[in-house]
Image (cartoon, rainbow, N blue to C red; front, side, top):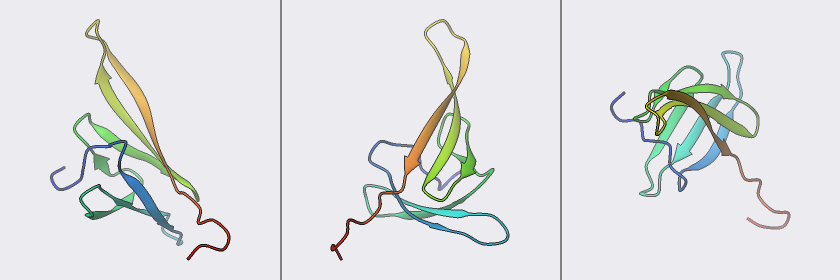
Length: 88
């Protein structure tokens, strides 16, 4: 899907919104762009799909071809970092 980023190590999960329709995650890329994700949304270049959005993380399943040419399903997890006590 155009407009949605490739899962990257420098991508941050900045928030999760809970509602009766299911959780929505907000991610931010290194260049400061924000995106909203819901379960089932395609993301990235490796046929990634948002598998689940929990209260503190987003799990994305991606298909990658290994060195033998076989397709493997891998899991990328974005974790919501909690603010430390006393910080604003």
